[in-house]
Image (cartoon, rainbow, N blue to C red; front, top):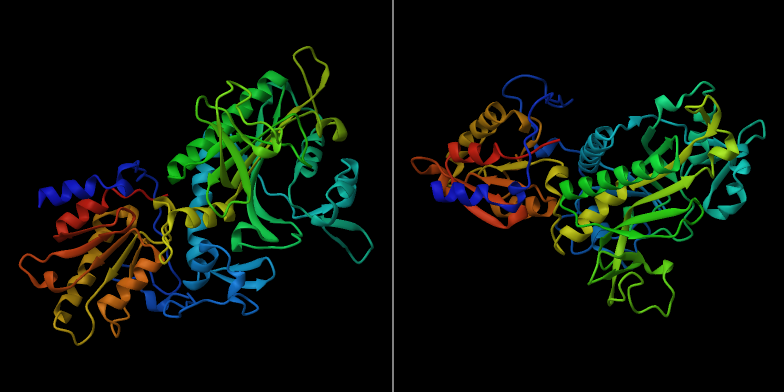
Length: 475
């Protein structure tokens, strides 16, 4: 038995976990009254699904529109539901996963001094006209007028708004800087051809941070600090992103980097030198360039999904909106700025795209909507006597492993066989699926534990299950 536990402790899904058990607040669910003995059950979940259909059709019924794995799987298990072209309803499992991702982002941003704000989605036209982006953005900018004829846009980004906000504070001192202000909000972009589900839509969630420093040197230090925080974030999620040199595009500035997640569905191509650390989006390279400009080593091209983008802006926006501070000599100076984006919904979809099999979703361990799924025996089967043990195990895990309260789901659809429910659990990608089958009737009882992210199956006693799950990290 100790050998089995040792194997479980060494699983990749657990090896990268860092304990964060303090400060946990148990969540309450509207369909489960607070108190001992109330269990979260699958039959009460609002989760439209087509798990047993041969194919899933998109909004207009054409299966050919489902051009990537993440889109197909997320529709099939009911993570998202089409609302209109490029817009999706995010259903409960996805919202849970996204909230976890936002918590990880908050931890990383606040660890480097980030302060969270929330700006309106409606942005006045005059702000964008001042920066010339009202015309530069073209048709991608969603524009509208209110009843008084005043023009607005639904912001795809907030450089103008945040700079005008900081500029309104007339008594800023260099001693207060740097400011690292960020938000996680809905963004809007009128994509000409939305595709790939959450990877490229018209409405999406983004984390956008804007920094204000007292000098170019300090601004570059902040730039490196945020890039390191991004790398830390992706490391925690188990996503092997590559930081590459990029074009500044319509946002502007003098330096830019993308964080690319290698994947065949990716719409970007980036080049990596096998001899040094150079990497760049191919758009920044001469089309005839075959070797690394830094060391002349060979370049290898890879497709990637852009999940993050950083820009050193300098005074591009602070000069337009007069965002100033009083320097050490008592004179007014323009703030040096940077901006930093993370595609929140895109990270979710991209992770599913690169981690999942063709038939089953696999999550970054930290982001799984629920960590544990318990499957009791089928009603009327020879193993039905083990059903009570399943409920007891649910309660015991909740008591003994506090961080998993609210993270355990009981598949109470006992009219289905264990095999059918296990197929569903594989589709959903719960990191741990625990089955009360024949071995649960042994003395002592053993539970069949599927460690999904590591493709391992072990049989453990109740005590060994608790030991295994006590290592699971939850945000």
